[in-house]
Image (cartoon, rainbow, N blue to C red; front, side, top):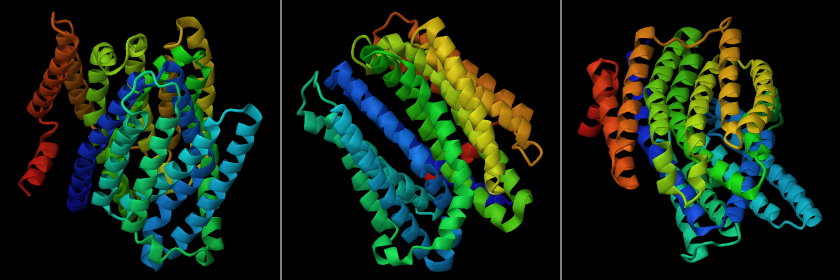
Length: 480
């Protein structure tokens, strides 16, 4: 492995990760605030709208976003991104018109005006997802971090301002507008950070580039549908405003935090892997992918252990009374998201070789498993059973992908490293859980559990020698 590439990748991942963790904490704070200022029906209305927007994004725009991310580096070198960004902008405008028309018709038929809010959310959310991914691939790391944190902060602040500090607010519109404004502001910032006003023109739309996008991205449309089912179907199966509010809000803690962990590490790893693939093929890219998975496990495994240990006191602290009924969902979702993150790394062989049809096949099988397992477990165990269905589905997706992708190449993490990480994480979780049993107030127990659990993990992982490189990278960054 090229040592400079490995160090650069680790440095970028370690730079992104703290920022994404802060972003994740802001997302958690936002979910917490919403349960205190909105009634359960409004929380359900916002969460359903947000879930549906993400679903539509994956189905309609995911192929474009993935294609743009895949090719932006080489297209930027060719013409400063003029053709790519002009083509993406044209596609984006068409999708916004399509979604606005669909939401308008649905709102007229159902009489539910939340669909109009959903259309606005889709436009701003899609824009920032695509532009932020471009910032990452082009090495504009500081701009990406700044605008991501700006978006997360505004979702919290704008919602509170629009409600005016009230509680039990009956409408979801302040939350919808807050998310729309937040992503809209961040998108405008990303537009200028990329210099798009000087290069994007509709006349520069490229048909050959669109054909290239379609060839790479169309199989990913099926993947997007399957992944959407994997991520969201359990939420649609939970019936009742109150139960849905409890389920989706607790689910958002683990899914939000894990998304930030996965994205934070992947944004440091994938650009380096992609550059290595272009320069040296599999021989250059695979060692970096192996290191990326190891970095992911170092952070994600103790996160599962910690969230499982503190799920109940965390739910009691963050949310309004009653929401703690969904606390087990935090633990179940964390484990499911761990498998999902590992699957993303396993899929990289398909993505690098542009053989995305295999991703479609694997994710479709897993989506079918998700639907069946969620229905069965929801009926057997109640509303928290949907999260157990997620574990079954995401674990199946991971193992199916591993078996099939081995004919190309699959990441490898040394067995000793895996054992060290799992043992250290288990001790972290045990220490944290022990703190939750102390005869103290809920907030004090939660704070103590977080501090003690993190300390135990850090000591164990450093003493075992597993985290030595990462500690040195952080220390070098601090000294600079």
